[in-house]
Amino acid sequence: MKILTTIVMFLIVLSWQQSPCSAQETRYILDSTHVEIKNHRAGKVRTTRILDILTQSGKEHSHIVLSENRYIRLKKLKARILDMQGKELKDIEDKDIQKLNVSPGFLLYDDAKYHVLDLRYPRLPYRIELCYEKEFESLLFCPSWLPLEDIPVSRSVFELAIAPDVKFRTHEINLDCKPVTGRHDGLETFKWIATDLEARIKESAIPGRLTPQLGLLFKPERFEVDDTKGSTESWQQLGLWNRDLFRDRFILSAQAKSLVDKLVASCKTDWEKTSILYQFLQKHTRYVGIQLGLSGWQPQFAQDILDNQYGDCKDLSTLMIAMLTHCGIEAFPALVNTERKKIFTTFPAQQFNHVIVCVPSVRDTVWLECTSDYLPAGDLSPGCEDADVLLIKSDGGHLSTTPGSADSVNRIDSIVHATLDAAGTLELDGHISYRGNAAFTRRTTLAGLDAQEKKDRIKSWLFDDHASQGQFKTLEIDHLADSLHYPLVIYFKAAITKYAQRSGSRLFLNPCLLKRLDADHLPKDHERKFPYAYDYAYSRHDTILIHLPQGLTIESMIDTTTDHFSHGEFKYEPRIEPSKIHFVRQFRIFAPEIPAAKYPNYRSFIFNVIKTDRQQMVFKTGI
Image 1: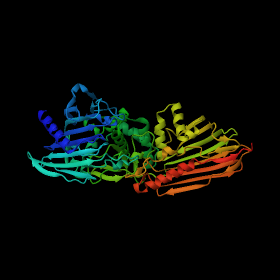
Image 2: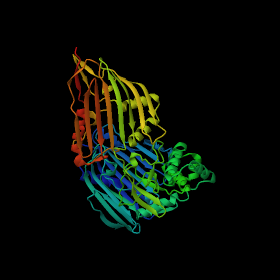
Image 3: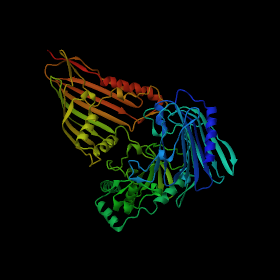
Image 4: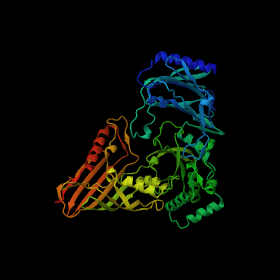
């Protein structure tokens, strides 16, 4: 520990000399990572961070969480709080560190442990010095270098000391610095340095594929996990390691095979068999994540999954493949990253966080999301659409891409008949239907809610503040948890008091009764460096018929309005008929990602939609 402390103090002095503290912003003065790998089995990483907290808002960066698990162990930890002259204010002791063993919400249990440090100090400014060391038991867990933070970084360093026989590859992400190389104690050394880094760019709705914004991905070509050996020399080689983890996991008992035979007995096509087995999986299993050691990648046996009736994504996919295989239908595990969707395809590595199933022989390839109870067979969740996947076949890994869905598939349609009385109250009788991803997202949202919560959520989907006085009289939901290949349909009767506003002899009425766009929907960024991303392309079509009370004459009509840009269009078509208003509103986003160059057009488009949605017709009441 004395040697470690000496190194830290040297770095502190060096950083004070090279990076004078700004009086304006909280920043990292130094962020240094040193990785040492002496063999193919294990390594260690030492991290040193010096952080100046200069503002009250900057104190949030004083909350530090360090994790460890079965393969990565925290071995040394030292933290201090100093004033800006280097005088120690507090030395963090073991009693100041909170140790937690809490699994994320989507996991029942994993082997991660967390060390939580609250390094806030009441008096500003102050400096945090943090140094810790971790040992990793497998080169699969070698860290990469991601130097950007939410605050500026004066100096970021990534050092690698590695045995000459340990071959490795790197992948640069917007990086313009080259390493300084050398040799030390029989190890080859590489050192990358980046200085004066601004905080990472924060924009709303950045596509997941564009994170991280700056970095160096690092991965040895050979690794070992427990008694398994793998390679990242190619996607095929990495797939072989995954294949071996799945090997012999697809075996079903004679009784289970008999059950499968009964389920598909009346099916005439492979698609019918696939659909029936998928529905069986949905009804008779549930998602439960337990990740301990190698089980983070290796599934349980198919028979155990069927007997226990639960599993995580790779477990449920394994059971699905086992049932399909028994029916003579070829199927493969497919690894996908639901957060990024697009991976670094030229950098073979374990870049995935989820497993789905590919059935290549059915309907020109069917993809199955086996963890969802609210998707029809063949549909994918938004995070798995248009995503890079690694198919795990008998000869190794093969890259492929899942299909995306068009806005015409993810469609929202409503038909509403409304009656307006002389006091401005509207009586509504209508229904709204959701298809594709629009149906999936709403099914998963409604599934865990009680009756009142469902009513409140549906009200928020249908109406805005303009209908805050609205109350449902009846509410029915069709195909929420069954017949998932049909649209989710919500039937409703409602009343909205004081919807039309009177002023003297005039009545002001906005025919756009359902969900509008308002100022909250206008993107806050005036300019962007990154594309603007939706979860999925979608379209909405509202048809509204408003029956008017007697004695009204139109004084001011709303014009038909159309607007479009390269990635979307909008149509607003009001029409006065005898004693009623016929109104159609259409909104489409053709593609889920809008390039930064098109963003000004998109923002102008949304602004025009908001303005049009606010327009009102004016009637004279004859009083």
